Length: 60
Image (cartoon, rainbow, N blue to C red):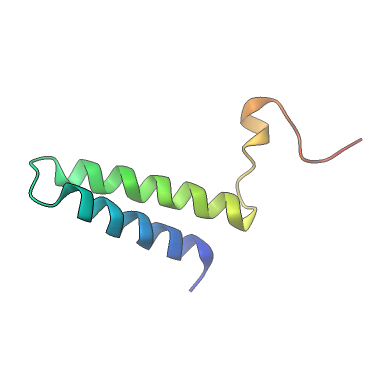
C-alpha cells in the first residue's frame, strides 16, 4: 500500500472517530480524508507546496 493510500486511510479513520455520533459525519470524514491525502502526497513528493507559496524546491 502506498503512502498516499495510507494517509487517506488514516485521515478517514481519524475523521470518523472525531465525528462519531455527530450530524455532519460525512463532511467531517471527507475533510479529514482530504487532509490525510494532502499530507501523504507531500510526503511522497507528488505535491509541492512551494509552488503554491511562490517558493521552489529547485535551485538555479
